[in-house]
Length: 112
Length: 113
Image (cartoon, rainbow over all chains, first blue to last red; front, side, top):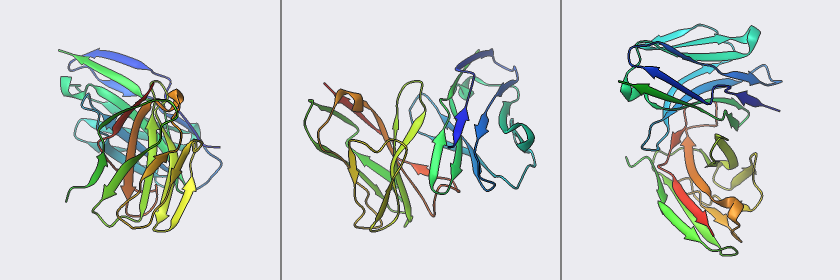
């Protein structure tokens, strides 16, 4: 069965600090997809990134970067120079064959 | 485009009552799904549909029914509400399956007393 673990329940940082959100997944399939979603205090879910299991290239988008390592079944998310607007709950998710499993989420608070 | 819309935004039910949560999308997406979000548990898949007339169960289907008579609509029915169904419900859609970005509705907050 698929499983996603986000061990960090809550993280608090001061603005401009770098922060890494951890995500570890389990699946028996060779083809799967990994995602990160952001849920700001307003409650909507915002798509951040998608990775398929055959693409281990790291990705950078502005202050956001993602590190996908199949050897450790991890898909970690780093925010560089955090800002107050980054405060949100972040979910890692694993998709396989129309089924999708989310982690429990990490609540990130960025203080000014 | 309105994207994914959900009604109502809030609902209070008494135990044993039934109701339908509405979900509609105007993006001509084949795949639609329902999730529930509970504190400390992330989102859990209830039911999904890969096209009109086709539905399947997700991780937590008990107590919920769905049908998909059109591409646009995917209602979620609670036949006999229980306090354990108190949650925030999200509907989502994508062009095809969960291997690509899903678009989420704004959510329905349901309280069962």
